[in-house]
Image (spheres, rainbow, N blue to C red):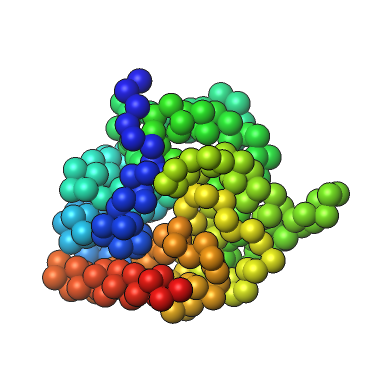
Length: 281
């Protein structure tokens, strides 16, 4: 397999050049309706192509939510394949938000679906769930290293239910979320300018000073925009790790559609606000 430049290095450059913003592509039924589109494959295709056209040449990362495409079956997945290909061709990095997690050959199959260079859904990184044990992710870690792609591991998520697992305390006194961060720090040890194995850490979680977020890898941070967090909150939440934060904004940008110009303006506004907040930290 031909190895491209490591995801962490490509992401660092994209964040520095385009600003540290990730725009979600989340074509759920209510947004399709807001755009005046039908909740069908034609509406899905119009929505995704418009978001890619408006943002892929100017934001660092696009993050399609796989579920909203999968619900339409094979025709929806075909739309997703096109969106991934066109976004990458326009210069955006694509993080596939599929949150896969399993063991052994099944985990390897999920990894191959999104991280193998010949896969129709080949993406720059994949979100994964470690809650069958961090070691269950080994096939995905190995393939990511081989292919120059990356992973974002669920660590400290913003949903209220997440705490019952992520804040559970292990026998060694460390909670599960902190354990995941420690695993990622080990994966990224010695990597420059940035490791390829990131964590998902919610921007709405408030004070995270009790956690070591210095994993030498990216921190994908949902919650900016419609969920209530702002760019100005990022230094307070992430502290000295803020330069490695990739804030995800979905509805805050997407609600400005279907006009391409309005989507672009919203994405550029968020990117500027985030860039300024990080620079001042």
